[in-house]
Amino acid sequence: MDKITEENIQEKINLFQQMQQQAQTLTQQTSQIEMSVNEIERTINEINDTNDKSTLYRAIGSIMQKVDNVKQLKNELEDEKETLEIRNKSLKGQVESLNVQINEMQSKLTPIVQSLQENKIQDATQ
Image 1: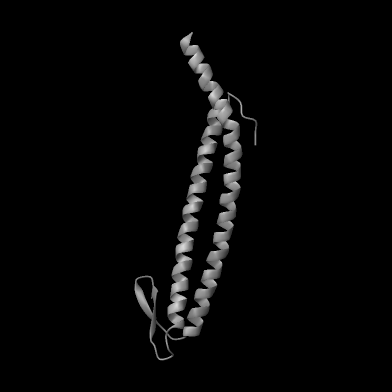
Image 2: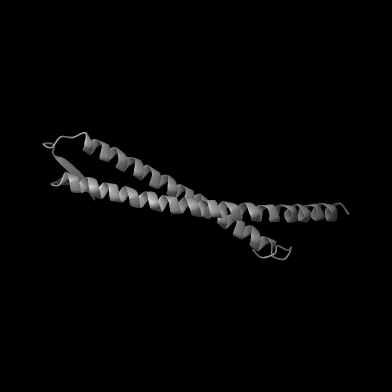
């Protein structure tokens, strides 16, 4: 990370805010993925609770399609779940990395911002 100076402080503050927004966006994505994984798990459990004579339908867009091969559907759902879990793990790693960078930047920005504010206060009282 570049050195923070009075000349580039605004640029660094903007970068800091962008990093915070990115971390928030990634966190929201992980929450959405976790909800999808939970939904898939519930679906798999429902499939397991059905008997061989049950008729199942799967939503595809705005239509429902009859499932001919329940075993294949279950495999597809398990693959989808695994893919989502891998993606979620990756996103969580990105969030952790970003949070480390955010904390480092905050520890560097805080004293400089406080110093600038103190200088402004001193200039205003003189």
